Structure formats: C-alpha cells, structure tokens
Image (cartoon, rainbow, N blue to C red; front, top):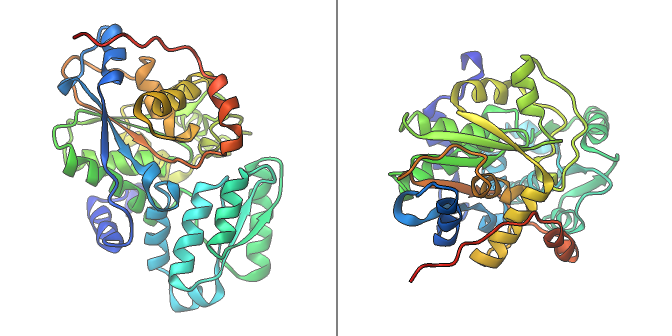
Length: 340
C-alpha cells in the first residue's frame, strides 16, 4: 500500500471479518436539529439531520471494529505472546473484548485519570489494566517499555491500515442505509474513524463531502497537516476520546487525500452536542461522540440547502457521576419551536 493509503478492497475485507461479530448500528434522525440549522439559514434534505449510532455498538463505541480486524490478522505466535495497547478508554475496551473473544491475553495501558467506567469495562472483558501517567503522552512512553519487556504485539489505536479499514466500515454502512447522503461528519482523535470513513465513502461515491472535528486544544491532526509533519501535543479537552498526543503517518496521508476540512470547536460547544443528543434525541452520547453533531448544530461545517447530512455518534461511554457537570458546561443553543 504505497503512500500509506488504504484501498477500498481493504474496507470490504474488514467488513467480511466483522460480519456477525458486531452490532449493525442504526441511523437515527432529528427534525429538531434540522430546525436549528434552518434558523441559521440552511434547510437540509428530508428536513432531518441523521446520526450513525455507534454509541450503541458493542463496548459503546466504534473501536471494536478496528480491534477485531487487527486481531484477526495476528499470527499464531503473536496470539500466544499477547497484545498491548493504550487508550483513554474506548479503544482499550475494543481491544479488551476482541482479545477476549480471540483467547488472547491483552494488556491495556490507560492514563491514571481515565474514566472509571471505561477502566472497569476493560477489566470486565478480562484485560490486564495498567494505569500510568497524567496524560496519554506519558502513558505511551511507559507502554513502549512494557511492550519491550514482555514481547507483546502492539495494537495501535489509530495509525495502522487494519485499524483504519475496520473503523472505515462505518462509512460503508452509512452508504448502505443513507445512499443519498451528501455530507458526513465525524470526530477526530487519532483519525482512523474519520479518515477511514472518508476513504470508504469517497472511493464509492466521490461527490460526498466528509469533514472531521477536533477540540481546539486537542488538534494533533490539523496541526500536522498545517505544518507538514507530526506535532506532539498535550491534549486538553472534555472529549477525552479525541485526545491523541500526535497524529500518525497513515492518518495524515489519508486526511490529505480524503477529508474536505477539519473544524475546531471548544469544549462548551462539544458539551452542547451532548446536551442536545440527550434532551432532544434521547441518546446518551459521550463528549467525543457528540463533537460531530455539535459542529453541525453550531454551523462549523459547510452545508448547503437540500443536502442530506449524517454525523457519527462515535461513543456513549459517559461517566454518569459527571453527567450533571457536563450538561451544566454546555454552550447555550437556541432551539426554534416546531411550526404546526
């Protein structure tokens, strides 16, 4: 695969690997979200904004897709030795469950402040969890030491063609269920979901526009694209699932080819997406999972009259004890009344 571009056939191969092993998540619709856009002067197609409900996926996030695809490609020796990964939570859970199903021992490295429910879920799937570091960058360094000490195979959270292909199956399903879609929006952490989804969609329907969304202070991919090189950062956002400490060579190359743009949004705007999803769509979506919706609601993504728009609800693993705090921090969003 030259130039670190994952070809379309790899996404279809991943889909075959995942068949019957993951949930086929639905596409939800919100006419209320469409009214918000109409108040901004944009009337979307069908009078609804759509959302791919990956927060209802196994483990509560899309990450199981890439993890299962990667696990299926391990050699017998790699399976016997075990695997290791690091994550703020959702990728960790995906690897933990995928390893459990494959009978492979998994070591999961997580920052010390990782969401407790995500830590508990990893342990519940049988993974060995090691909490280390104040942020993912510190965790990464320790992970490399543990990997070398134990001879484990690393399952990357994003910068790997098998991971990207697995996550990109989201795009294939969107085209199946919403074939006339015009705009797709997804959050960016490491970028495998967004760039994989973009590639799967645009290699099938080139006219569809795909946009990514990053928190203002967790913008590793947009910085890398701007400067033409990987830029280490210390991510800082309420959306911990979008907190990659750097971009990857694969996701940078994929973003250059397939993304139509990246929107940067602040935490209060992200939390407004969480609040809207809960109050208006009755869906509990974590901040990382609601970032794409927030970007659309606040007009951060270019949408034209008549276009059908689909966002990805990428995860729903919310620490419920913090829910009140999260909702209280949301930016105000005016909801126009429905017209009878």
